[in-house]
Length: 419
Ligand code: GLN
Image (cartoon, rainbow, N blue to C red):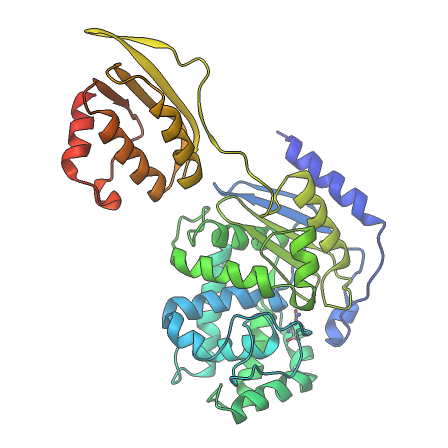
């Protein structure tokens, strides 16, 4: 069945197709041969459903879009402290290929080449061979994509032969001890990392895996822990678009990363993974049409992180009285998501219910609850239950994980027994 989302995506591409601004990234000779009219976009939902339009099966090299994923693998394998010893998290405000270090001698962040080359060198530890490092990276990025990826050898060789600037960066890093291996070898394998081939579908799946706390929703594999995703998305938001990060934050507001091949990917936490592709890039190295596509998606689908979300838990209007075996009770039916802001408001509303009235609190329609929402609601249930009959209807067991809440088990049992 063709859905409104498919039609919408096709429409977005039609509206962006006329824009022929930008230029092919010809500093990599092989990229100068790409068809500039290629255009594609994909969206991957939290449950792994993919929508895609345009040249959806066209493969292109991942380039700098590999950087957040290799940063994620380094964080997973070495821990935050060891990675932070080699690379910072501050926006540099410079171009991606700037030969620059922060005042503390570390590259400023892992999204510019200096930081990405440093992070690349960490994979597998100091004793890993070049082949081992590359294999781990290909395996890791493939796990994010949920399928076996490969390397475009023509782009790899073409870029490596002309990688004078990246060799300059690696030599600088070696001179201050940020990398310990032979700089030329590090640049060769970093260039191979950038030449991994992906489609927009792959990028959307990779993005949603970051957005969903590290579990690929299509393969159900946990690729990285949730804390890693929080760290990576934060750095993508502040540094992913280099010296255009402020423009991107205001106009799109989605943690993102671009690559000079013409791809852009974005990950909205807990919600969706997005990808766009069109080869002509602007002065920052971002796909011109890719940026336009993201601006539209963000605006049309209300995806900007700073957009005010309504308080998302409601007591259903229809909530009235329910018959219990021994009398009637007030029916409080909740709908929406339970988190700090929404439960706080809910608790104040529940406070208005006169003491003594029997209550049925019904969670059947609750879509989502996070640990603090659960903890606050359990605490409120315990208080509400004092001096009245309280029944909790919780068919999906959303409040049942007492260990996670740190609450007295008796409170939970008391509530559960009433059901
Ligand atoms: N491989 C490219 C480089 O190192 C990646 C740059 C990019 O995509 N912005 O120059």
